Length: 454
Image: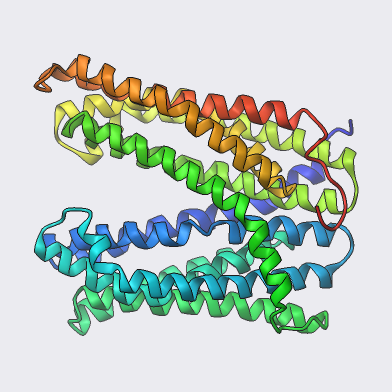
């Protein structure tokens, strides 16, 4: 097997660093949005939380528009067909427009009953419905951003999506301040600012794709057959994403059943875990682009070398992140809450999160490699298997949590810390099972299908 060269290390950094910065841009600006709306009062802020959860779920279900498009475009590029790569990207973008239009209509029509499920107060519900109905107009642009970002990643360009992310989210903050407080539009102003910023991001990235298409003389019209094929190819990744979302939702449900202190501690630790995944996801994005390009070019040895390199990166970054988290762990809890019990539970949960980072690094990188290889069908089946294996484990934690906390939930701080630790231990089991299946898969050659298409 060919050893990774310095140029390959530089290639990983060239792709991963801008991808990481683009990934962290969104949550940072979402925090700014929350601060802007929070000045309106508790009810609008609560409404923003409900509406944002619905909106992000509706959009993130279609993350295959980015992942699947990256793999297809990278394969075409590796095979020497730049025009084929751009054509595949155009098909994916038209698919995003169609899915976005349908999803936008559904979300707007179902805004009130969906928001009501969260059980918020009447004032918060009104704010959530107002925000969601307006923000639904931006869903097509959100999906276009996913698709065009996938195209650019497949073309080995992660800098342009970074520029679009910083510009778009920065404009969102400025527009929200102006609309919400300058013009006095309230939470509706925040929604309109979001729609305008998302539309601008989608338009800018689509304009880049159009420029590429014209330079390579690629038609911009939709090809219904190829668009349908792109949709069909995205189904396995959709199944994978839904199964992963189910894991996260059932974990949150178990945390909620453990009481307010464990739930609050889980929310904080889960937020930190999510932030850490951004860096690992950046490596996965680099793995998608490099793997697809190498397989498209028919370079099996290069694919193996790149996979080996990416795995080392994932493990090393995971170890570094885990060590840093262990070092700062005592100071994390007080930044989120003054409650001593919640602080103790956060500290306990973060020990497990930190120890699991090397495993997360391995899992995320292999996931990126297999997505880049177009191995979506196997990923979907594996994630469903992992979900089914995880359910009895996490439900056992629910039972163990009841024993720790007692029937009245008065098991003391030690019981509350133990409940959070057991919950994260169960989640680590989920990651471990997922890792074992991925290790078994990546050791074979069945996922390495060469050529412009899989």
